[in-house]
Each structure stands twice: as C-alpha cells, then as structure tokens.
Length: 247
Image (cartoon, rainbow, N blue to C red; front, side, top):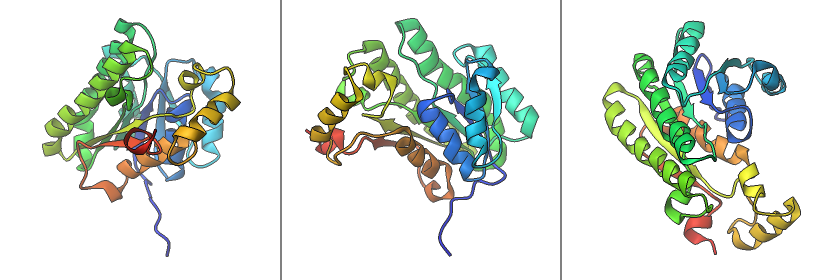
C-alpha cells in the first residue's frame, strides 16, 4: 500500500492562517486528517470563505480571533483550543507582519514565544508534541530592504534553537521552515506586475520557478508527521535552491 501521512485524532493550531502560508498549512494539515484551529486577527465573518474552502478537504477548522502579540490573547488562543478539543498536538507559529519595529518584534518574536510557552505543558501531555516556526532566508541574506523584518525573523530563528533545546526533555520537537521567494504581497510589492516578477525569478532560481505557499506547507506537514521523529532544532531552507546554489 502507498505510504500516507495520517494526522487523524491530532489537533493543530496555525497562527496567522487567514491567507498565504498559514492558510496553505491549515489546509494540508486538515487534508492529512488533523483538526485544525485557525488563528488570525480578522473577525470570523471575514474568514468564512477560508473555513469553507478548507472544510472541502476534511474537518471544518475551528476559528479563534486572537492577536498573539498580546500575551493574554496568546494565552486565550491556547486555552480556548484546549478547552474545545481537550488536546493540542501541533503548534505552527506562522503569524508574521511587516510593520514598524515595535509591532514586528511583538508579533514575529514575542508572539511566537508566548504561544509556545503557553502550549508547552499541553503539548507535553501527548508525549510527541510538535512546534514548527516560520522564519525567512533573509536572516542569512539580509535581503528584503526591511531591517525590522530581517531582525525579528532572526529572533524566530534563534528562538527555534532555544525552544528545541528547552523542550526536548518534554518530548516536544521544535523545528522551523525558512522560506524565500514565495508568492506573497511582500514579494509582489517589488514588481509592477506578476509577469515581470516571474520573468525575473525564472532566470535566477535554480529550479526555474518561484515558490508558492503550498511548497512551504508541504515541509511543515513533514515536520508534523512521524517521518521527522529524529529532528529537532532544525531550520529547513525552502527556497528552490536560491540561497545556496542560485545566482
């Protein structure tokens, strides 16, 4: 029989999941059988289409409107999710912003830590809890032209290593995905059209194309599955080869 990743009976929280990498991650985890909790700052009526779309491939996601940059709201997200489903197996810290220094640090670093810290005792109960953080290759390249984004994504990178070391004795595996050149509003902001952007990257990407949210979500799924039980503290680069072998 073909091998299938099965996350049935697992509960996964994905922060910042109303669009982009977060939405794609929530969808693929749902398709693998998980009950997904979607967090975002938008009112529930504004994410109905997202919930409807994901429900087409599995269980309907449970939505929590919470600003994880606020400690109390991050705590509420974790407690509400646990009270609803009596377990949490997976936490994907995807929420991120391009904003001023204070907001960037509050979401990209503090929010990641708050959610992880409040979830750790619950994840500990499963004996094989998973945390997956989303950082960026700009940590190494210094690209994007947005210093506060680069600096705070470096914070997410460092926290991945810290949390992996701290949580390993609890049986919680903490890893991260480091994307680059993924279709997004931030990427498109540099170009006058999608066609111009695609032409540019076709020449410089070793695999001849840009990435899409689903490309990152696939790596997250691997890190949430039983295929990655010997990995912790790893930051996997998902960039089509751009950083190491690209132009």
